[in-house]
Each structure stands twice: as structure tokens, then as C-alpha cells.
Image (cartoon, rainbow, N blue to C red):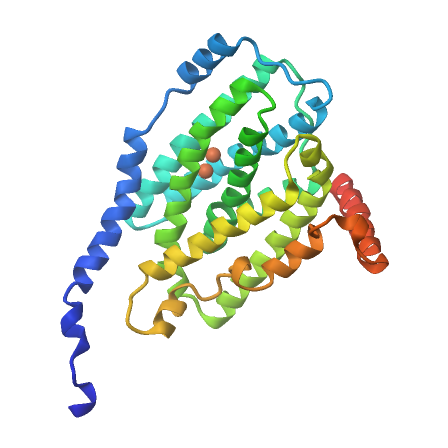
Length: 324
Ligand SMILES: [Fe+2]
Ligand SMILES: [Fe+2]
């Protein structure tokens, strides 16, 4: 009796309310999505009317098309994955959020396709590593893997690329188009933030280890695919280190949001709700960041570092070609 005193849960009378509030927030993703729907044809037509037919500067064309190809096929994958989530998630509120996302991703895909058609340039093939990564998220039977792979890892990387492309102002139609994407994508991350903790709590130890392994594999693929793109990003005036920092910050925000949303009171219960979820910003991330993108440039680094990077880059390029 005395051990249970004071009855802290009395102050948590809002527990049921809070659970309800979380569901409401999840459902709201759908309604906010509906209110913010933009007509892709109208937006693209208006931008082309304003700036004229889009053309890429010759010295940046190859790099820009490589990046746009990743985004195009990434949007198609996001469309399939969110439609799959919409079908398989049981909770009505999360199902609504995933359905709204599928509608957004369809728009993202066709608008980017139409933009590329307006450019009139052939779209280069997707690199093999990026292709394998998207396939692994498409094909995994696990809802948790799908949500982590798409909502957390791929969406945050895509957001960093959008930001980089907008800031680099390669082409005015694209620079004004992508902020529409960014707004939608920020909402998509919300589904992962609100729904994942519920799924993660139910995982066994073995399943949790599987989640960690899936993330490590996905992160390794993202990094290797990224290495192949560094020169292209630099050519577009996008600093790869800044982009990686932005991605890590987004993933850190997501993890914080999840913890803030989890039941309060006991630290371990909070951590429990995101167990198995890696937050690069809190652990290995900064070290990898300094290794991949050393401050002051790779040329100033010792021989072992330069050699390792050269070997990794060459291997990643070979694997990328082999898997393409
Ligand atoms: Fe998208
Ligand atoms: Fe998305």
C-alpha cells in the first residue's frame, strides 16, 4: 500500500485523453492532407508560364538529371509503399494517413514525370544500389521495416535533396516546384512518428534485432549510393556534408518527437516505445559524418583515410553498376 503512495497515476487522468489525442492527430494527417492538396497540372503549368520552358545549364545537366532520376523513381516507390501501408495497417486513423500519403505520392510522381518531359531530356537509369534499396523496402513483408525504410530513412534523405536543389537554384521552375513536395513530405514523416512507436512496443527481442539489422543495411546502402553522387551534388553547388547534416537533424527530430509522444513518467518506458530505432545523431552518426565528409576536405586527411575513401568509392561505383 505504502509503496504505491502517492498514486501518481491520479495526475495522469489524462492518459485516456492523451491516447485519444494521438489518434486524432494521426487522423488529422489525412484531413490536413486533404486541405493542402494542390493541383499538380495547374501548379506546373503556371510555373512554366511564369518562367518559360525549363532548361538545365549545360555544365549541370548530367548531374541534375542523375539526381532527378533518383527522385522520380523514389516517388514511384513511395507511392507503392504507402498504398501497401494503407492496405495493411489495421488502425483506421493510420490507414487514413497512409491513404492520403499514397494520393500525394501519385501527384509527386506524375508532376516530376511531366516536368522531366517538359525538359525534354532522357532520364538516366537509376544506380544499382539505390534500386536495391528501394526494392528491399518494397519487398519486405514487415510493416515496421517498411515504415522505417520509407518514412524515416528515405523520406528524410529525399527532403535533404529537395532542400539542396531548391537552395542551389539550378532551374527556376524546379526551385519553385519542390517546396510543394517538401510540405507534403513533412506530413508523411508524421505517420512514422505517430504510428511506429505502437508497432515497436509489440516487437520481440529477435524482431527488434531484425529491425536494427534492416536499418544498418539500409543506412549502408544510402551511404554507398550517396558516395557515388557526391561529385554530382558538388557540381550542382550542393555541399554533401551539409546535406548529410540536414538528414541527421531530421532523423534526430523524428526520434525526439516519438519520445515526446510516448507515455511519460518512466524513462525506460519512453525508450521502450522506440526500442530498436537507431538515431544516428545520438550515436555513430557524427563519427560517420566526419569520416565521409571531413571538415576542411578529404585532401587534408592522412593517407589511410584518403585510401579508404578511394577504395570505398571505387567499390560502391562497381557495385552500383553491377546491380543496375
Ligand atoms: Fe513524395
Ligand atoms: Fe513522401
